[in-house]
Image 1 (cartoon, rainbow, N blue to C red):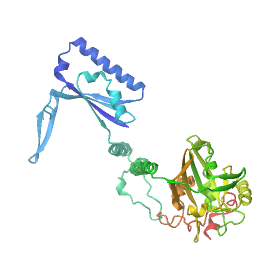
Image 2: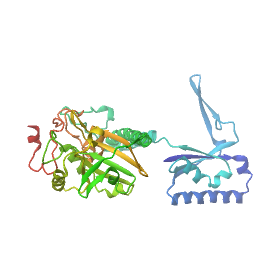
Image 3: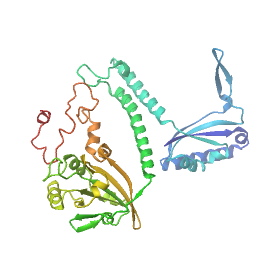
Image 4: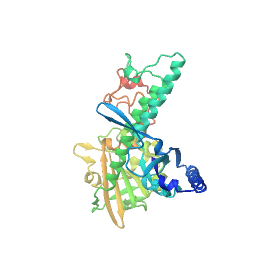
Length: 385
């Protein structure tokens, strides 16, 4: 985070120093600034002349009055500004509390307004580019002069500086979305838990395994309820195409193992059907059959209306196990990184539910989904037909 540190000077203290003492104090301040630079914390700064050389503007009665000095009834006057990079306010306080300037007067520390500063920087970039364009005889226009879409449906074509302004506006919304997501995750970590009272025995390649065995010695467990059952597309030889796409994106488990979390897939299909499909998909994830148990029904993923994919999270505390979280349908979508990348691309996911520019390619939802070894000879035209 960026912080603005405003150093105030008690001029009576400063004027009470001898010239030698004043020079020593200045050298100490500059030396500490160098320490901040070496630590990557010093962004910049400005020293100010005496407050006696300042003027204050005051608006009133339809005019602006100019008077001498700062608008403050205090002996401590603003003497300089230092721009500081710190993790948070406490870190900024820790860094500035050792600054020699504190002995001359207090420091006020305020977080920079990143939203407004980003807008200022973006407008400055546009202004500089506009000056360059004008000096080169190039016509300029403000972002508001452009339509959001051209007659062909393509977004407006602008110069790079205007594009930067537009992307900075979007960036602030993205940052807000990220902060909201962090807050939601914090709330998720504080959800109440439900104790698992029932015994479940799954079938795995190592033989029968109870729910506690799926933790594999770790305290946390994520179970992906993979749809592999009757009345699910691909049965009896293949699992759900959407579930298969999600599992393709799970990646090496070493990264989550490092944070005390295990992952397992659980499906209703017998192990004799899971293993050949796992080999076909070239997956290395632990996959267990819940066939012959009420696990799927108890966790709401097998109902009279059909099968449902979902994600359950568990926590183990000694011999006790608790379910801490559950999500289904698009709640599992965050695990599918290809959607994240497609959402960043101009055409998006190209599904009819999306709000896209006129003329963008689109198909019905799910119609283009395939298992990763089934795309080879399929074109977009074939999907659309």
